[in-house]
Structures are given as structure tokens and as C-alpha cells.
Image 1 (spheres, rainbow, N blue to C red):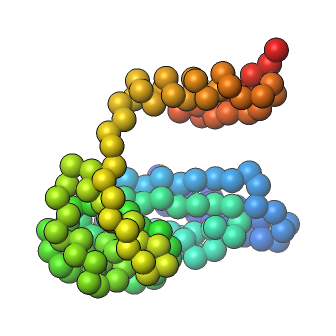
Image 2: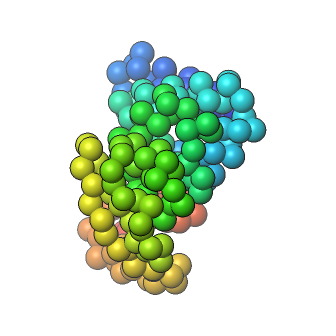
Length: 166
């Protein structure tokens, strides 16, 4: 379950803190954060808050996405601990404020179709992202891997470590 995995990650960051290590780097991806918090309850929210507060220092990074960023669902501790935010189209100024973490970003005016705001350290940058198909991404990754020096390690989209050898 999600709670079991988050609890393991919290134990991992605590172990890393005791040992003074931050390797290997781990990235936790959460799709539909709001839904997860609604069904997971307070124990799950506590674990996620702990991860977002202390994880970066221990080499555990959290990337979370949601379609409905509301204050009622995403608690203030969780919101406060995501230092970088990418905001896509939202439906209201309140959702814009919750998603961006600051007011006055005009995120509610984003057009969709790749139109985003990057929020970093209270500064916003509007940009348009291009669509890259899975085939194009795989071709680019293969091209980069073929140019890597012998012995360099690469992780594929399947999580396998690939090494180029002569």
C-alpha cells in the first residue's frame, strides 16, 4: 500500500540521517496527490509531510502532481515543503494560489496545451513546454547513451542500469 511504502521511505531517511549519507538518490513520483491524501488519512499525510520536509537532505526527492489543488485537500505543511512548482491550467484564482504557493501569479489565465508557470523561490517564469513522444524520448536517450564514455552508467525508463563497454 501507499502508506507502507511511504513509511519505508521515512525509515530510510531516518537511517540515512543517522549514517550521514544521502546515496543512492531516490525519487518518489506521486500522481494525483489530492486523491492519495483524501483516501490515505492522517498517517499518510504525516509520512508525506515528513518526506517533503527532510527527504531532500537525505537524497530522497518527492515529485507530486494533482489536477485539483485545493487547500482543503492539500494541507499547509505539505504545500510549504515543495520548493519548486510547475503549474498548468487551473480553474480559479484560489486554485492558482494553492498550486503556485503564492498569490498574484495569474496561473488561472494559463491556456493549457503546454502553457506553464515555474515557481521557484517566490519568482515565477511563464513558459511553453513541447510535447515529446515516447518514441522520440527513447531515440534521444539511445543517442545520448551511444555518445557516453565507456563504463558510464545510465538508467533506462524501465529502471535497468545500462553500461556502455568497448
